[in-house]
Amino acid sequence: MLPLTPAKRFVSKKHCVDSIRWLSLQRTTFAKTIPPGPLLFSHVYLPERTPDGQPQRKPSEHPDFMKYDFMADPEFEKPPPPVELLLLEDIKDLGEKFDIVKVSAEVARWDLLLKRRAVYASPFNLKYYAEKRKKYLAEMESRVRIPLDLLKMSALLMSQILPVTVSADVEWTLSSEMLINSTQSLGLYITEPGIIHLDNVSTLNGPDPNIEGRLFRFYITLNGQMIVPMIGRITHISVYESTKSLFPTDDKQMDRIDNELLAKFGLTTESVFYSSRGLDDILAAEGGIGAFMAKRREKSEERGEEK
Image (cartoon, rainbow, N blue to C red; front, top):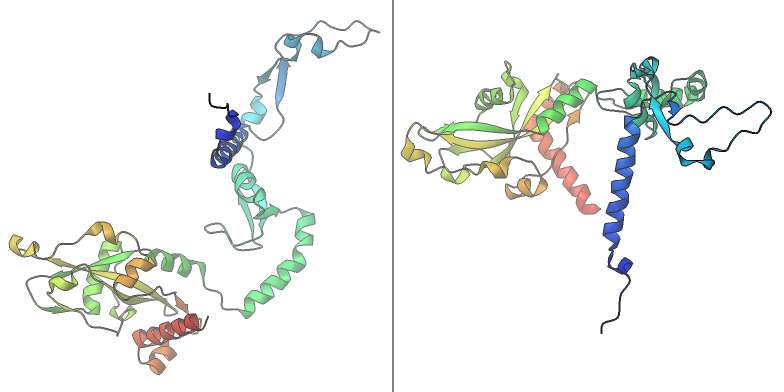
């Protein structure tokens, strides 16, 4: 006969952790359903009135006396007013560090206050953080601070792979004009050809089945101050069905931009470049955006090898 093993030994550590997380999530979900403010309750079974001069009966004498029912109060069913907070960090689509913002009570409680990303904009907190805010603003003034609208636009552009349609029937050489026509697929309507710059590493010509689906680097300048590195993808099109079969493309492999996909085509991850004084000096000194970003990329790779 096999010895009996306690059931608790069959419970894995992962199962216990998952159970604890599930209970925590359930408790958080339940807590979010409770409206902020006072809660009113009434006895389900109202005990008899205690006679004058007699000690009050203990609720534990009868279980029914310990049953309560929640009473809805119309005064507290209204949504609470917005809460004024002082941000302790930069929060996307909300504000920058030490900004004073107004948000809903639910967002303030669950997303900001409990996570210590903000505090109430009370007179005490405003006075307490005044000196820190002053030092922080002085430090930020000495740094190069990128405008928020440029950061949002650059993040949106860098998350996309631009499909560049080229002819499978006529000879072509990749140019800025071809990229401008293709950017309309992303909802961009560019009227100035000078804001798109090709990488000067290689020149793409076609039609060529070997470069179908190939990724390449190009750059877009925003507001004459920021250089945004972008990724394009060669896609051949043809009016002849027999020619289309020569250029198969697996679109499922081109949905995301990651290091493995970039390395497959000899590319690396690049970051935006921002200059508050503009990019004219760079264009004059370096011989173009492509040459400048190539040197910047080489320096970044050298620093990575040294580490």
